[in-house]
Image (cartoon, rainbow, N blue to C red; front, side, top):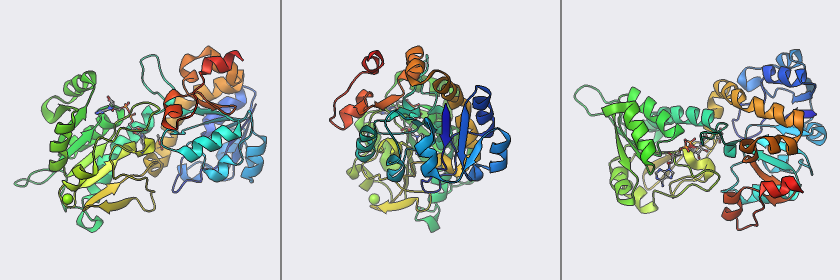
Length: 372
Ligand SMILES: NC(=O)C1=CN([C@@H]2O[C@H](COP(=O)(O)OP(=O)(O)OC[C@H]3O[C@@H](n4cnc5c(N)ncnc54)[C@H](O)[C@@H]3O)[C@@H](O)[C@H]2O)C=CC1
Ligand SMILES: CC(=O)C(=O)O
Ligand SMILES: [Mg+2]
């Protein structure tokens, strides 16, 4: 199989779909890999590194997209990339389709086989291809939140950890899954007073066992969130319903009730965000202010630490990329029910129920596609 790795073109996205050791693995399995010129340079990976691993360096992304049997990327294809996809071509990357009608329509129209990292599952019910990036984004959230709380950034002028004699900031984290847990780790480490909200009793129990009394855990209800949001200096949104648009847990009125200069970091923005006033921003222009509250809603936070993130992502994506390349997509999906859950769109059909529901489009089961 010919595998194509284009350079990411999203704003300040420096990650890359395959690292040289992944390329070497695929080449060892008898595949050809084309990597776009400078695709890895933002993650500290040169064209020479890729050539040394057996890749061919290709200047023109149009040719790479036109020829490759499988495209391996990081972020969702932007409109110009979507135009280059073709019937039957495999696209293996993050997609986040539920909040993105334009992308969904374009992928349906392309006829491509679109497998989303974020809906691949594991035997434990986790999302193994989302996990490492949720770890990264969770760990970044208190860091960018602390920066946004600085006066020059429009924030309240509060130091997350306080100092002796002056209280620490109040950090409220909505969602205590992967990203929320990692956000709590860093916020506690910075000395903040941390509360984590989740609707899962299991998640709350796990958090209490992990953090003891260094955080508070709260069951997710509207009134609990209303009270906590008012008190928060930094509100971090990390809730997820897999495949679906994020539930809007914080209304515009709740945002209005926040302290002037408080900060929201909506990590869940890639699934549409869990705060009514959130809209996606970029690393070039990461924040905006609504009702005196600074919003940070960057949808590709891990791109900021591209080297760490690229390696972490490849550790989990490589076995699936190899299976897709070795067996072809149909057999790979037949053999692995967890990879099968990654299929979102194929041959013009939507095979991820939450995505179909989000856009009021027909749902077709992956199993029926595989039988055809
Ligand atoms: N902005 C960015 O750059 C990045 C964003 N993400 C996003 O972060 C989000 C979180 O991902 P993970 O932590 O891996 O998910 P996860 O599934 O590990 O955790 C989500 C948590 O939200 C909880 N939850 C769901 N509905 C809730 C509700 N109504 N009230 C309270 N809690 C609720 C779940 O019980 C779960 O514990 C996802 O949307 C993911 O795509 C991940 C990486 C990078
Ligand atoms: C998960 C995701 O959206 C990211 O890593 O950018
Ligand atoms: Mg206010």
